[in-house]
Image (cartoon, rainbow, N blue to C red; front, side, top):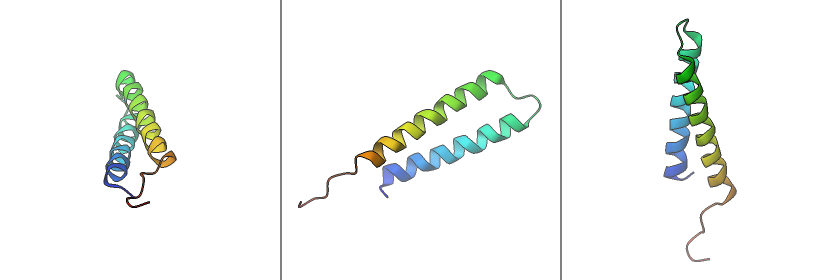
Length: 60
């Protein structure tokens, strides 16, 4: 797992936790929830692109 992939995975986990807390609260801001969902989708897309094309190994 590359450092970049790991950092993106951590950001996805933090975003998911924040989204869960906001959705569980009674006074959750619907605009913030929508924004966090879009951010989470973007992070997932970046992670899937990184998985689809692994970096070239040096010397091959």
